[in-house]
Image 1 (cartoon, rainbow, N blue to C red):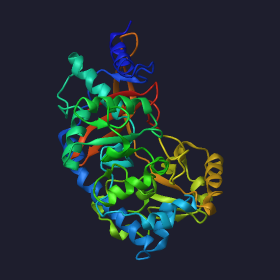
Image 2: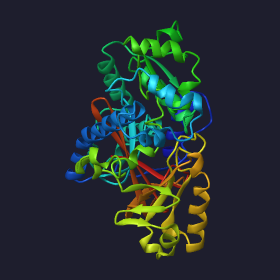
Image 3: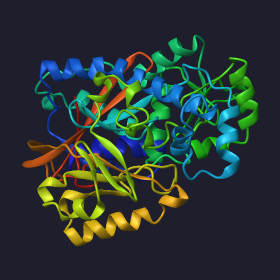
Image 4: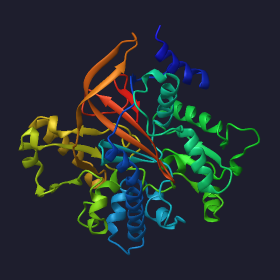
Length: 414
């Protein structure tokens, strides 16, 4: 019997009355950043918010033809007509309506490869936080955060709304729905009330709407009613019902020829270089390269990820539709790029993103035999942010360069 994994398994199973358990490996210690790395995680919040505000402004102005219409076309990409240009132009969006709570993925500290609102793994973070609180023998150094993620989110949301939160959390499109259900129950312990969880709370009472997908908000039975309440400043959204921040497309804008002038070097500096894959080729840092010439480069000079950039819900989340071109043969690289370009005329857009790796780190984890194992691994760092800034950092470590949640992934927090 393994007391450590029993603690993690029973923690979620007993809370939800299910049998899902903890599905990764637990580290034998919190992750230790140096002082400069820790400081930069906190200060990046303001840079991220400025990036989001500029993206929102550019998109809105493009819809109104005050900026190049191509900007809005890239954002709307393959949405159905009824949710496209007219819908987005008529939304009662406010200039400050950027994501309230979100999660970043950093491939090395300081390079953000993705931003998701709200993203997954909030429940996983809290489970690991509770694990280290209970098993104090593994706390080899002081952690960055003394308060749990549910307690921080609850306080931040109350302050943000300036009233008692009543939440409707739509979790149909969450990649780890049981983790979000667990997280909801933890925030209820800190006074947050939810439609579907708390007696006498109806959908009409809700003043904060959370969803993991733009299209999920579009299928909400109370969509029009809630937009009216939003317009009357009676309700806020976590992810506003616009497709803008529910895709990877905005991360090209600091580098795109028609938009890069609006972004400072400071903003550009927190993202890996990105550009669209087009029939003309790939715009790399030093200019346009044809598909043929790119694929003929040695693997060591093809250090880019290929990622779906658009709004197709089936393939725009998690690690789906992500390829590391630096590992592919010349023939397979060409086949992959030519295949994704088949959808270009139908506005199914893909992008390349410069690859960075935090590798050869010593990952220490406890296996289910109670042994502490050490192995070399790649790391990924996920920052959880709210309206007051950084609230937590989850660290994933894996022996494979494409780091994401799996039974072989080592999980810890900072």
